[in-house]
Image (cartoon, rainbow, N blue to C red; front, side, top):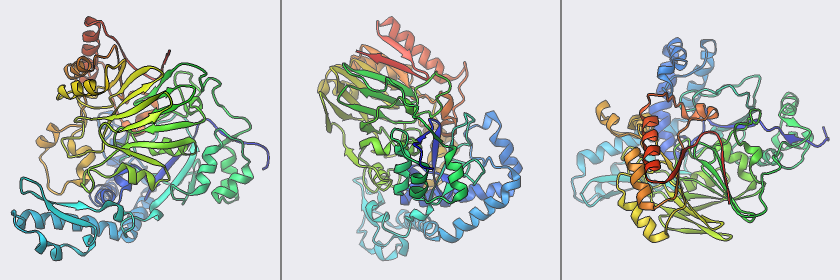
Length: 526
């Protein structure tokens, strides 16, 4: 047990809350309460009513990404037990969600532009001390949540948190928004919070030697779990020899929205969602990351851009995570900074045009338009990066609905050399991701009109024209094979998104702009 050991390349972690895969909207206390009451509990109840229907729907390609529990009927008693535990132990959260609905109805019915003071005694007790009532300049009343306090209230309980350690077998895992993770023979199921110190000891073993005995103690494992852990370890590291550079600059595309920008002195990683399966040679994996990362940069809070399973594995080697600032207290706009700080990260919060210095360059937050179903969500940012003499635009899923914005960006920061743009231009409807937060029903027609969409061909072309970029790269399309459990995308040759990408690439060719649709991996060196 005392021989040197390293983490295997394909060792993974799944962070869980009440056995659902953890992401921003089911960890942040207010939003977690709403999603628990309005999405997860009804989902589990629906499954228990008709488990065969859920399992059949889960494997139907036409229903990919739907809210169906992919757990065999033989284990339905475990789902029933989970539901009972949630209803018993999460009563504070369920009551808080009901209180939000009641309070918002109270305001809708009675707040007509006059003094809001008389409404405070009428609020449900669960909200006392945690909200402020206010009008906007159109005399529409709303509640604003004092979010830092909610992390110290009964609706935030780290005992909800646990982790599962296992190996990535290359088989797609169940969809994260719909299927809870049950114990199994191939996973180490630990009741640890996300900040348990033993986890960082475990993550460090990817780059630094440790021993089975040391990890067993750090992770508080029993004999059987120690035997399981040994299968996750190897006698030597699997790190790539070219993960660092000695001169100039380099960008590597790691899939989806993840870019690694490097010089000999600095490293930035954007929206890390990185494969752990190094058997194929067609992708970069965690093995290809440098041993030290100055900044992880997050563009927005969607589950495919702030992926806690990757972030946690990087935590010991990251100086800070740069995140966009939220609007403070808006139900649809939880603070990414608070979320990550409570997950054990050092966080730098930025607003539009705030700068973070880099050795030989700088990172500047720039505005992000659209892609959030027209909800008032401010915690989203694109970035302009100056590194090794090159200027790079990290566009994520920002839309070109108003191209003049990008003209202002160029006037303020200068011409762009390389632009990375997302073109998921026929995204999911409003209710697919935000149903749990809605306190008034919306029609299907209304929901379908408000999609989580980035730029189409014309909008992407307009962005490029205004930025004056020499090169354009389409990324963040969720096409890589290792992302299915989070993305559940299913494009084909006739998909509108791919047709729009082809149209954009043709436009770029006609205008003398080098352009490419990225997939799996790509490298730029200068």
